[in-house]
Image 1 (tube, helix red, strand yellow):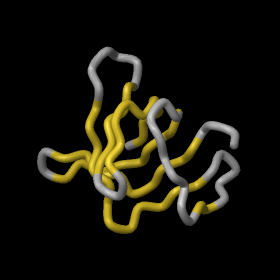
Image 2: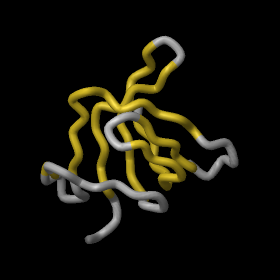
Image 3: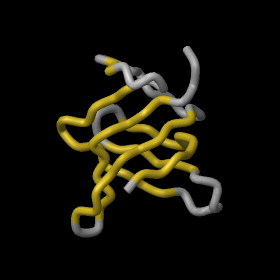
Image 4: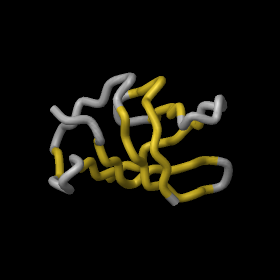
Length: 77
């Protein structure tokens, strides 16, 4: 699955919370080998995510958790 939203909380290498516009923030855990890419699909080594950035996350459901294995940054640098 994938969803686009704005980062409202971010814990480096651990988890993030996305505001996807529904009024209900969605919590995601980051997998150990999560891949970050820019809007062109170029892999980013250290993207330095921050709150209020728009991203798209690709995730799988593992038990009660949404586990992200890919993040696309939608903001221009």
